[in-house]
Length: 473
Image (cartoon, rainbow, N blue to C red; front, side, top):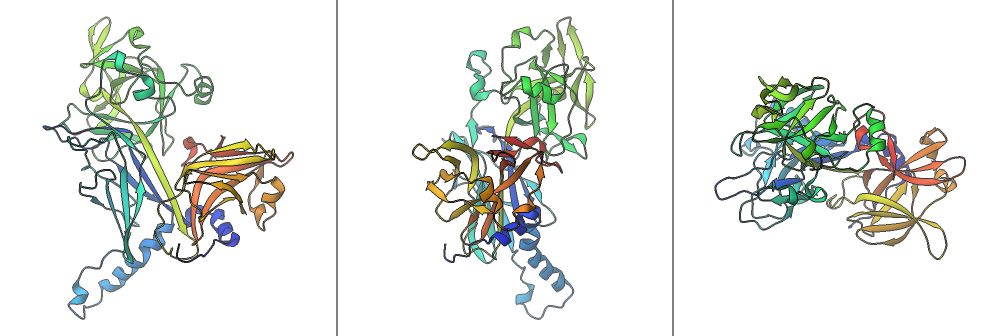
C-alpha cells in the first residue's frame, strides 16, 4: 500500500450503524456446473451468469459522472473536443479467468440498472480446464487497472452420465439446503425457459432466472421441523421437497420430485428412491395437494397442469413439465473506501469462509481462527469496534486471541449494538490500512451474563429479509 490511512473506530462506527448506506456490493450468481461445447454445438452457460450491484455506495461512484452528463446536456458545445463521448467513470466486463484468450464481454450496469446477465459465455471444446471461474472486472476512469471479482469455481463436464452406478451423490447429487435453478428446454439448441420469481409471482423467462433453496421435507410438518430431522442429506427421487426463492422468500407448495425418462414419469418410484437427484437431471414436480398435477409452463405461465395417462403405472408429461435442475452458487463482495479513494485496487477482496474457536496449547487461552482467502499483513479484523491482535497469519488463515466481553465493550460507542435475550451480536469487519472497509456476513456473539462467546453467520434464508437471523457456527 502506498499511503497508510487506517480506518478510525469513529468511521467504522458510522459504517456499522448502516452498512447499506456505504457499501459497494457486487454479487455473481452462476451455475455450479456447465457443459463444454462440442464441435457441432456451442453450449452457452445455462443459466447465464448474473451480476448484481447492491448498496448505496455505488451512488457516489456512479454519481459524479451522471451529474456531469446531465448538466452538460443542455449546453452548446464550444469545441470539437466537447463532442467526443465522455468515458464513463465506471465500466464493467465479464470473462472466464482461466481462459484469457476468450474475449471479455461488457456488462450493462449503472446506478439505475443494477442487474444484468451475460448470455454469450461458453467453454470451447478444445479447452482442457476441469474448473473455471467467472471474472468480473471493474474499471475506473481515473485508473485503468482492472479490479477483479471472481465467482465460485464452476465444474466443466462433457455429457452428463445417466448410468446409475456412475451417479455418486457426493460428486453430482443435489444436497438438501443447497440452491438450484430450474429450466425447461426441448433440446440443446432450443432456448431455455427459466423459472423466475418476480413480485412474488411465478413466470418463465429466457433472460433471467431465480435461485431456489431446495429442502428435503417431511410430508406433515413445517419447514423448520423438517430441517431439524433432515440435515445435510442428499435428495433422492420420490422425496418430498420444498422450493423457496432465495430473494423473496416465496415458497412453492410441497411437491414430490420424480424421475423423468423420455417424457415418461413412473408413478411407483420405489426403484428410484435410492437414486440421488443429480445436476442436469430432468425431473418432474408432482403437487402433493393435487397429485394429478405437475409444475408446468403453459401459455407463458408457470402453473399446475395435468399429465397424459400411459398405463396404470406411468404418465406422459409435456416437455414444459420436465425441468432440468442445476446447482447454483453466489459470490458476494462488499467494499467501502472510508478514508477517501483507495491508493490502489480494492481487490482482491479478503474473504472469510469459516471461523473456528480453538484452545491455545501453551496458554490455554481461546483462539479464533479465521479461514478464508486473500489475507495479508495490511489487514485488521474487528469484532464490533474492537480491533483484534493477530497471533499468526497466512494468506488463508488468521489466528487471534478471543477477546473478553469486557474488552469488546470498552471502545467508545460500543453500546450501539443492542442486547436481545441476554446476547449481543457484534459484526465482524475487515479493514485495510489504506482506509478500505470490507463487510462480512459473520458475527461474534456474547452472553452478557457469563461472558461466553461464539461465532455466527447470517442465515442465508434470511439474507434479504428486514430482520436477519444468525446461525451459530
